[in-house]
Image 1 (cartoon, rainbow, N blue to C red):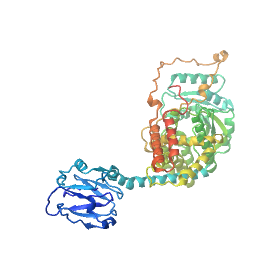
Image 2: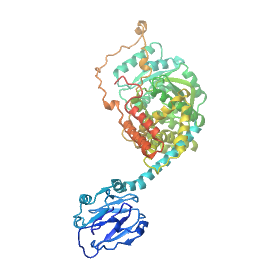
Image 3: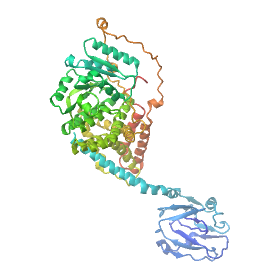
Length: 623
């Protein structure tokens, strides 16, 4: 039964056979008498086929009513209630108001007062007419603006994002197919390098804010100095410029001016004794080479599942990306450690700059634009450690994702305007190195696999092609797994882990592009792999007597009781929020949309929950 209850007063009636009285008009007079008129008497057989005719006035005087009756070919009608309009769609087999069981009569007269907006009350109508309201049909009209927004804005926007993600995914695929106590260990490994002792200087750059650690480093340097090595411990009283600032200060020392090459190692890196013998000859025999980069080998890769997954990603980076850049273009990213630089190349490129947190990449790009070439040596390995706590890994990934995006923004015009390199090398640096490798890859990973795919289950109009969901991602995954064949069985887990980290990488990349918030944040990556298991070096009495000025000074900092970790230190709320969204999407797909993504969405949501609750990696001893 459909009702029109606004001025001028009117009412329309629809029987169980879905006939509807759509409009009423008022003639010239009214009279009310109590009568009970059977509903079936208002309809004739020809009306059941959709014909329209005027209902004659009954002998008992129905009043000023003049009715038009139509069949179900009219798909919609309106309910007006005190100037409030509800537009109900798709009601051919249904009614908003449905007569109760066994009710075949419409009561007219004294039991129904004048049909005006002021006197009409829906509850009285329901009381006098045993009817029920089908709210599912009413809800369709209430949410009509949302449907309009969905069809005009949301669906086209989602389809556009899908197209962009598919295009970027193809770009990444093409790129993959065509490219193919820590300080003691590090100082000790550097001091054991095979090179004439009178032609090498070991420089230890120390800007630590921990006075106890400074004393320990000084003690270790004095121990090796007593053995006849030329070792310098350069201490800064501030951390201005972070690593770039320390390297800049180190280059200003007088004794550095006589050096031709600089081999760089972070505090947790341990080169083999023959490292210099296997890398420096490239620089000696080819004056066009500015950098020789070696490969990292991870001593704690088997410590936990997270370190295994990191090893897979980094092995692909060295085996494929670095090797391809060295072979095809003579350019790749300097990894910040385990490499040998020509001093004149550093000076020619403008030295170390602290405008971003990726000073190593900054120097490499500037040196490449000056015409210098790089060589990657895959068979020279340097031991290093992977961050084994999720918190430390997140800080590291923030720096590795935010820094390149920020550098790309600052150097884009400089790269385009450069005249010393070919256009192909410019395209390689801009498109392949920066855009695809540093920005598009983490962006597409999160937006596509954790955004577009789960959102598509709520929009039947959005259909993702099968090749974009299965074939291309599978090939990309297989390409990135070749770096570590022994971990091939972890490929599926690695995919879930990469998708989780893409959230953090996307936020960091956007921070770098827009230079917001933590754009210049530098948090030293905490390493726990093998260093905390290494036995301390034992110094015998005779050796200790040879130490010069190596007395361990008493720290001026009292023992500070560490603050107990709270929920904010153990839980990662952004990961948990994405996990809830993916879980709901998986449930919706399994129950309603039936697109076949439910298994992936549920499993991926579990991966986000595992990371969000901190059940990944090892636990830091600080908590």
